[in-house]
Length: 362
Ligand SMILES: [Zn+2]
Image 1 (cartoon, rainbow, N blue to C red):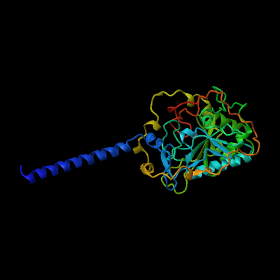
Image 2 (image 1 turned 45 degrees about the horizontal axis):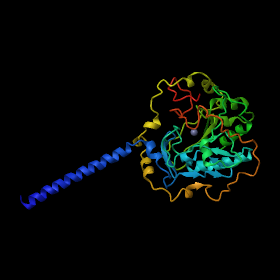
Image 3 (image 1 turned 120 degrees about the vertical axis):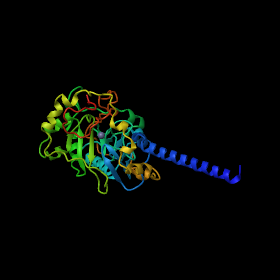
Image 4 (image 1 turned 135 degrees about the vertical axis):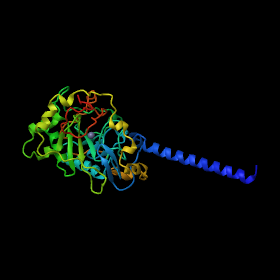
């Protein structure tokens, strides 16, 4: 066989191999966008180092430029540290710091902060339909104890339900005006659009709040949320790809929409309990396109440089005496709707016609 002919064959073979390689490359890439979003976002330990932007909706999106709240601040302690969910849009993180200070002024001993978001948001491996764009945060109804909890305690301490076991009404041995004031303070900030609480807590507020009741409009009943409340702020300036939630209906919400929660309908067992949750099947390709860039963006140099109150924060609690004795109860079994239970698959607290209820909180 002559040299040039062999060369040509080799060339063709090389070309074919290159085509195969490119083909595999394309396949690998499309497989990536087909990856489960919760795995890809759950694997990120640091935020995307860029301007803060939220992309998509509370229950389907991601965000860049995340900031963390320090595990310890003078007026707060963050819980369940192993989950690495102390991240949010900087506006949310600053708001939590402000709320913690204001709450102490109001006589609340300080905040126990639950889940905010993963470093780059997105769906989570466990729990929460929302919390995906850095604009949602959970705060425990348990007051901050006057000593620093150890990392192990922050994993194991059970939150205390405000709702009577097996019922839909507030347990008056646990509920207090100080908790009402905490909710009122949180609702007072213009950034806050909604606060989600158990329907029994909403009912309690409807029955007891006197004077200004306009803030009750922001407090919406929802499944779960008996041991913590959920603060949601609106899309922030500059977040072009952030999808707003509809404003709550006019009025204080102490009406038919609340009465619905005291019927059987919201608590019927899920007809299809084995149906997968959106969070568990959401592929990267289902998220806004920008989320792929968020996922691939570089991280900041360290966690410390993007942590609020992370350095130079006194490790002692506030000097003022707690208005209420700390009631962290380590003997209490977790409530039915505890930190580990899944949230319902829907996240818009309005009455729905006989739709599937993801999971009842009872
Ligand atoms: Zn929440």
